[in-house]
Structure formats: C-alpha cells, structure tokens
Amino acid sequence: MSRSITIRDVPDAVVDELAARASSSGRSLQEYLRGHLVDVTSRPELSVWLEQVRVHREASGARLTAEEIIAARDADRT
Image (cartoon, rainbow, N blue to C red):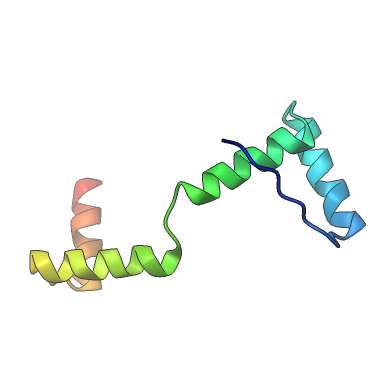
C-alpha cells in the first residue's frame, strides 16, 4: 500500500532545482522524487554495508594489502 510523505520547509532554490531536474528527465517532480526514494532504500546504509564487508572479509580470511590489490588490477590491464 502506498502512503504519502510531506516534507516541510524545503528551500525554494532546492525545490526549483529538483523541479528542473525532474523536467529535464521528462518526469513530474513526484515521479522524480519517488524514483530517488526507491533507489535510496534499495541500497543498505553505508555503515551497514561496511559492517557486511568487514564480516565477509573476516570470514573469507582474505588479507591483501593495497599494493597487492593494485598490482592485481594492473596485471589484468595488460
């Protein structure tokens, strides 16, 4: 079920910019903002994601240095 959200005290300049971006993408302001809200909630918060990475790294036992990662990246480019 869909629900409405009201956001108060949004500065005029912000509303104008959002409306311009919505218009340039061929969408209404409501469609534009709804799309961004859906997109934001489809990804975990940064702190949650970092914790997931930490847990995965510990479980995998991988211990690569930054230099090893860069060397592997560069090796794939040749």
